[in-house]
Amino acid sequence: MPKDVITTRAKDYNQWYLDIVQHADLAVSAEVVRGCIVFRPTGWAIWEMMQRGLDERIKATGHENVYFPLLIPESFLRREQEHVEGFAPEVAVVTHAGGEALTEPYVIRPTSETIIGYFFAKWIRSYRDLPLLYNQWANVMRWELRTRPFLRTAEFQWQEGHTAHATQDDAERETLMILHDVYADFVENVMAMPVIRGLKTEKEKFAGALRSYCIEAMMQDGRALQAGTSHNLGQNFARAFDITYTDQGNTVQHCWTTSWGISTRLIGALIMTHSDDEGLVLPPRLAPTQVIIVPIYKNDEEQSKVMAVVERLSAELKGKLRFKVDSRDNLTPGFKFNEWELKGVPLRIEIGPKDVEKGSVALARRDMPGKAGKQFVNQEGLVERLSTLLEEIQANLYTKALAFRTERTRHVHTYEELQSQVEIGFARAYWAGSRADEQRLQDELKATIRCIPLDQPEQPGRCVLTGKETTQLVIFARAY
Image (cartoon, rainbow, N blue to C red; front, side, top):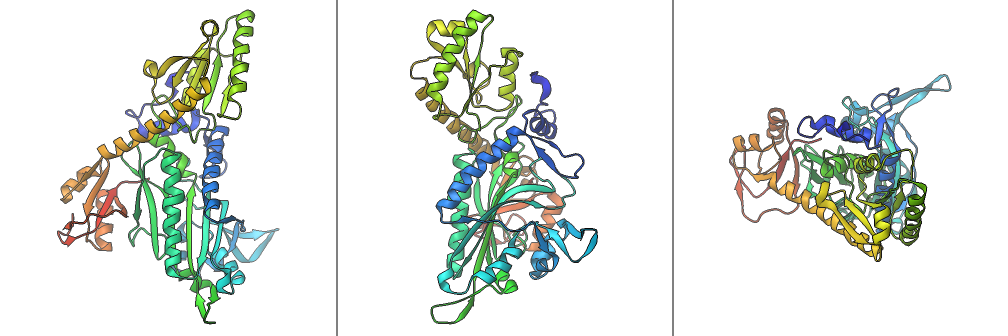
């Protein structure tokens, strides 16, 4: 595969991203369905790896998987006013079925708080029924006007957790546990993507929530990407759908509910956090294929000797690492090297006639292109060597991403400094402004308060806009 299929980041960052989506076999436009994509095998395999890692963590915290309908009665959305106002511009509505107009239109699921709230009200009667801890893997539809593969599409895949609790404290603990122990843990330790944990402002919170928490990551162009959200819904949806329970004193109380989700936009975040001008770069713990083996030979005799070694090493690797053997005989080794580099496979093993004679193999690390990432190692003890290298690659990708974020983050004290900093990265600033002030900065700078970090400074400072003294520090950035 030729190397020049990927536009460089320096030339056109947006086209670089689209080229990787296309040429790394991640997705293509659905064309005949506005704003949607078709997942290609590599893209879907990555999502399956994400599902597996997140699903294990979600279930380990006591949640069970369920599934609710794709279609939701339109009247359900109107029961929680802030919620319907927040989603109204994005809702797709089904008005006809079976050749006739529906008595009541259905909306195609933009999120499921309303229909799940309806059934929670049926299922919960006593404090003994709580907490109710559910999660569903589903597709949703939001009629986005400007779309970009994975980052913003009309239809996308996600998981959405929904829980009901007896007290506000229980709901708050649930919300923060998901943020820290499920989302941040997966994104940092599997995706090798450092995140800032924080609280959304009133302006930026989820429509209908009491409080919204998030994890924010920095992409290679300095922009922020919201990688996951966890919402304490308070009693807003419980009151709208009459989700109540009888407490130990035989008094009827409204439940406290939560919702939380991560979507396929994580694939976009993955691309923009680690990839380079050669193509996709995948962290080993997430890579569907961790090791690609490329046999090299020129004739039948060499093929026989090389493939004997390949088969022996494959038997040793089976069940220990995720690997493939690229034995296609209609492509040159160089073409194969370029293709697997473009698809982001963390490690490549090359085995040729000389390697057979020496009892060695050539290894190439995807996180270190060129000679810096190549080495020759003995075939003996290869499994252990590969496992060690994969962990080194995993750690290296996280370290590089964290160093980049640190380099592109700066504390600012004035409006002029804020204006300059959001051009290149994150701006840390004290904030005591109003919602109107927040909107003004968004209009003028095309930047938003991404979050109020959970780790706050002990010392007060002056608001970057109003000059008022405050102890609240926030992160400003332009975002996807």
